[in-house]
Image 1 (cartoon, helix red, strand yellow):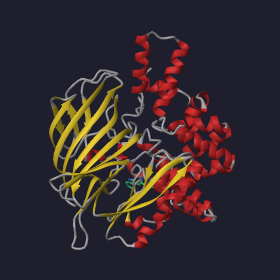
Image 2 (cartoon, rainbow, N blue to C red; image 1 turned 120 degrees about the vertical axis):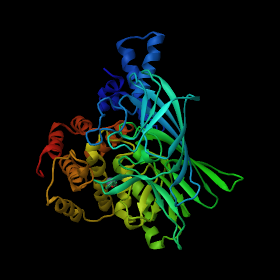
Image 3 (tube, rainbow, N blue to C red; image 1 turned 30 degrees about the vertical axis):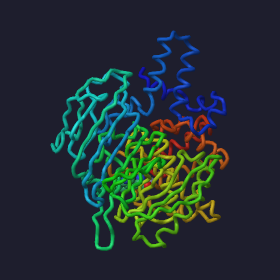
Image 4 (cartoon, rainbow, N blue to C red; image 1 turned 45 degrees about the vertical axis):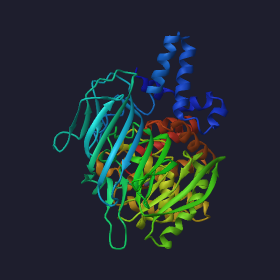
Length: 506
Ligand code: TRP
Ligand code: ZN
């Protein structure tokens, strides 16, 4: 049995009920710690360990964080990620010398751990040219496979990593960062460059779901390996730089640049790393308390963006409060939106949603906030399960509508109408299905059916339990079904299962 299977096999509800409430009520204590505690406790009960065993337990418990032995290869993106590799932290340092151009310098340190013996470390990477790679501070041989049609873009670090061992891999690179073109999704993912115009200075930002982050930095680019991030951005004076996480420091340099650091202490999937660089207005809003926890709020708008576009973001605090009532405590310490000008979908980048001008509407704002729980805090185990993200985020639009005292019937009708041309079981079998109407609308209708059957109080308890027990744990529909059965009973689980598997709309 692999370490990650042991952790995954711990019944989430058992975990929730066996731990003393004060521990669960402490927001700073991550699921990682809970998993480690539970695993250690269970092992201690079954076999009193020697010191050597205790050490081993600590290592395997830690090694199980954020990876699932059953997640790779991904059915839709079989080349992404390395089975057995667990990246715990990314320390990302980016220099953007001239915003609006693709020019970039990067210095990324990955703290990695192996949960099985690895002959080498194979990171996803199609970014700027690699200059140097070190392993625990020492030079290490590497190979960057890129530009060949048949081989995926990988940075192969040629050193073995035995099971249970850590290493710090540091990669420096420089050059133009393009995106990763995705013909099926009809979008170029990754580092975006918005050239300056006579009326607007240049800007850059990330748009990475599903696999654009490896156009920027070497990474284990799959949601089944979420990690924490520290991001330091160095940009010219007068340019604003923002990233996922809480802002730590802003240091001015003598050469006319400044560096800003952001830290994200809860693990999130790689695609959720958000970065925005440009001439931006900063709108600090009053902090809110959600479930006794303080959340700071800041939005960023390109100076050219008019007030009508900015107005709906003033509701952000109210939305956070309403949604945390349904979902449980907001998972991070900060939130905001960075508004961008190109016509792209909105994206739920962690603590800092990336909001195109054209998507600057209340419903989309609600949707991206909901993803902070569903997708960012609770990550996917497989790209075929995007409905777990999109269904919950879409359903949040209804919860917000009702909280405003408005009728939800038009939304429900709208979702059914979107599915009239045809639907499918919820698991996506092609990349084109990942963000289709079924993922969004059928996912939301499934949750509504569940709520209608069990009632609001049970539904709320169910949502709270899901976000609390699955945070940081790559999640599959089976995990949701297991929880449904445990918290809501077998009838509810059967209902949800019908919505997941039946070809036609139930
Ligand atoms: N997750 C995004 C949203 O909230 C949508 C999205 C991300 C998307 N990447 C995409 C849509 C690529 C189409 C193509 O809803
Ligand atoms: Zn979404």
